[in-house]
Length: 214
Image (cartoon, rainbow, N blue to C red; front, side):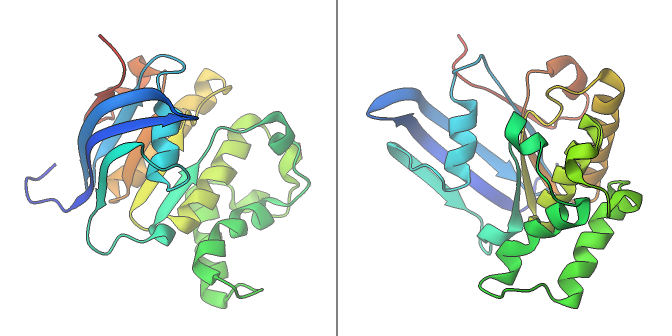
């Protein structure tokens, strides 16, 4: 990254946990525009809690998170881990992708022409434009993840938060998704990704955050 890249996130001395129990402490790091940050650590180390805190879904027990000037909630896309129930969701690919526009549309009960165009563009970018009318639950695991990534892109203007995006995918589908994510980063989207797949992501990452490791 260039030294003059815009600072998007600054976390200082974060202490995270729930129900009064500390699971992650003394965490400090920064994220700049264009970074590809991989967050690694053992199960239960606090990775998902950190991501939910960055999304504003959890409040730090102490410490500070400062956002760069102009960062808004509708500029952050989020790809969570998928549950078995979600994999059986009875909606079309287009409907799932468009649901990522809700942050932009606010209280409006409809999408504008320009918003619909954003969804179509992201489906083409992710190589699923030909699947727009297909039922989501009929797709392969790789196709479903592409659909969810296109949905997240509809929310993202600057930052994508990805929680184990290739979990459950076969090696070929995983490699294809990693390639897509790298291309998005090359286009200027900042990536923050939780991963266990260190061997296949270190070639992409510009920064690595190892948490709760000796």
